[in-house]
Image 1: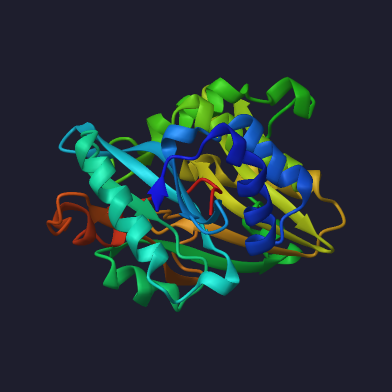
Image 2: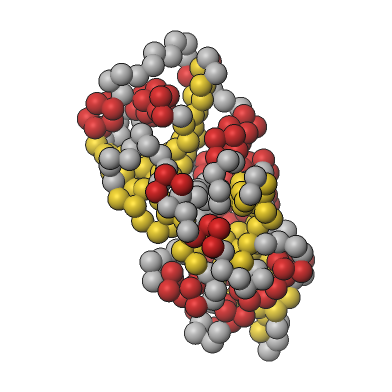
Length: 303
């Protein structure tokens, strides 16, 4: 039986999350304390045991389209208890989510498949490959070379930091004119930053004389993963310099970038990243036909 979860099911949903994803108690609790909404969650309850055995969450978003933002929902933390898999439960949840979105006037459903083989699974559920990213791998010397013509930013890092609301608005300003761009409001952005920091990450920001940029960075040993890097090209070297200063011991850097990022266009490889579905069942042609410098961007580390 598919339904919105009752208050008494919250602890069961948290256990289900931990069992399926292996996340820490702190990570799971942070989501349920700051982002969970029962009317944006669907769960499948086994009536024999009266407990949820599968779930998905629907986070509100927007997709830029024809000069405006079309309502969208981001399918997040979709999972099924291991002993209930391969029974069509998740397919039923996804179809119910799309019908629910349609009834609420939500045009699109988006998702980031956790594994490459899941692209095939979601395509069977009516999703299309619509979003790509550029993966760039560099060592410290590479980045130092790219920073050689950097803008000199005086003052301390604290003097040039951006407020969270400024980062959110800067992202919107940089990307909203791109067809198919996925917009997140301030509460969504605040959750993304908080969950990122819960897992040991850090958002490096830089603003100086009207120029701005930010990067979601996560250190792993001597490697730093940068899961979002938004900056104007002419200011990119200054932001990279700030990242190097923030992680003086890091030797390797992995960037996940918009395909349209021209600063890194000569580097890395382009990979499929996210999928999109129209809740009315039609082909989302306005998004999936865009490519190259016109490619849409989902981004924000919520995958």
